[in-house]
Length: 118
Image (cartoon, rainbow, N blue to C red; front, top):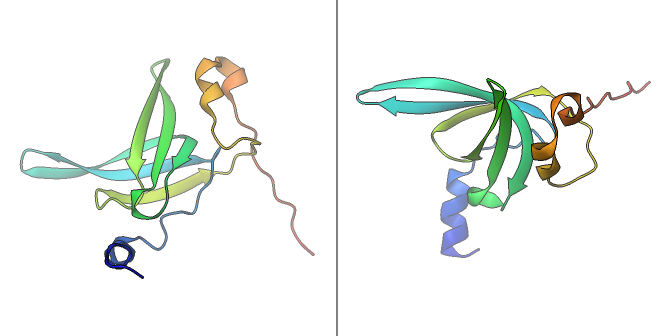
């Protein structure tokens, strides 16, 4: 293992990647306003995952007052405290960019229902 990989593995979060494309997540991230810090929660649909390792990013899309808003979060950033899974989505694509062109019920992602094992 080279020096770059050694430094990167030290900064990786263990429980960071418990979600997939199509899932609805809540991203808890810290915002610094002057001298105060607060945690803001951004809830939306995961439409893309890019890169790997320390550079991994997630694109989350939500509707805010009828307007689609997307935000890209670095998964292993110290500002991102936690990514909480709200519901699993059933999709057949690696990237959900087509959701940008959908309106209303057409923009919904079906929920993944897992059958209980006996």
